[in-house]
Length: 104
Image 1 (tube, rainbow, N blue to C red):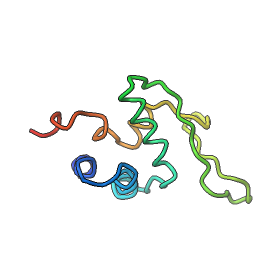
Image 2: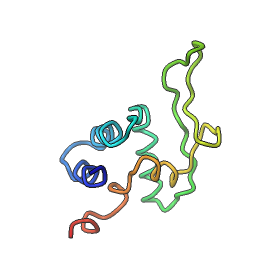
Image 3: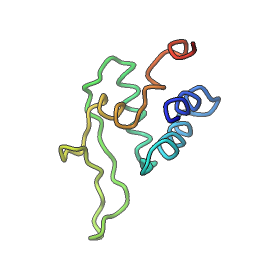
């Protein structure tokens, strides 16, 4: 269901930010925070620029339990993630292919 719905979101006549926000919240459990929309856009841009190893900065999402800013980190603890990893993790493939690649 998630991949098909992502393709539908990608094909909709809405701005990219809105489509990605719907996808991140509706196709993931737990939902991916909306602060990840911009890093996802940067990862998609890196894909189309053939630079999948580009490091994308990860955002701060509010404050943690200790009252300090909560830095989103990648699995290795870094505050940057490679574009390919964000595409894979957030299932952004629908935005990383030509429209006719999935319309069959």
